[in-house]
Amino acid sequence: MSITTGDFRQRVTVQTLAEKKRKREPIVTLTAYDYATARLADEAGVDLILVGDSLAQVMLGYDSTLPVTMDEMVHHARAVRRAVHRALLVVDMPFGSYHAGKHKALENAVRFVKESGAEAVKIEGGLSRVPLIRRIIGAEIPVIGHIGLTPQSVHRMGGYKVQGKTVDAIDALLADAAALDDAGVSALVLEGIPREVATRISRQVATPTIGIGAGPDCDGQVLVFHDLAGLTFTSPAKFVRRYCDAGELISAAIRSYGDDVRSRAFPADAESYHLPRTAQDAQKAALGATQATSSARQKQAKS
Ligand code: KIV
Image (cartoon, rainbow, N blue to C red; front, side, top):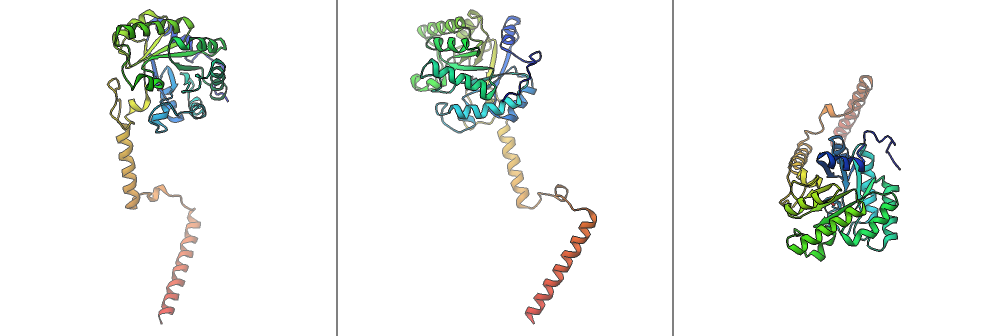
């Protein structure tokens, strides 16, 4: 199942990301989880579309990313694949899919490539992930790293907290970034870390950095589509910029539809199908005859 054409001239590849870092051109990244939004993102010129495991929360209503399964990720990634013709398509490895050994991790990464047309996979974590990341890259699957506030580590972190605020924590992040860079990741997501630390990492590593809550000095930025569009039900994090209030727009549209159905303003005659004129006349005549018969019967019944 692949809709990719094999013609890479117009497409964003992992080489394009490296080139963009060299040319200091910001990499525009956005999450998408379904055909419609992925198509809008691709047509709007987004460089990298991520089927993030955040879909657990924004699409499936779970309260963290932990429960989402490989099957659920594949299901959404396949829909996104059908819509994306230009952007690089990256799929998140969900919690549990790479924690049970290198072999299982590789099997799951291969599954994303084969079943959903992923062009790269994203894995959370630093130094400790290097052996399995090398194994996946060795199997010709590009990997995107992800360090800082890694939502799959919510229990270890004791909540969704900004990381890298002490000297030791900053040193650990710098070491993670250097190790992933050395392992050959194609990009590195920096989430929820102080701007100053993200700037240091972005300058230190050759791989492009993509920030979310990491300040403006990263080589690119990523937002969750539902945050950008105002489709979330809790107050947004500090780093979120809402570019529209689609939630309010959609609610107002649904309320208007309900009002129109209740008042019979919807559907109008123009929104109805019609028989051809001759058949309409025959139907009117038949309706007239039915009405005449039924009123005659009513009169009979009363007398
Ligand atoms: O799952 C996701 O949406 C992500 C981004 C926030 C980077 O990992």
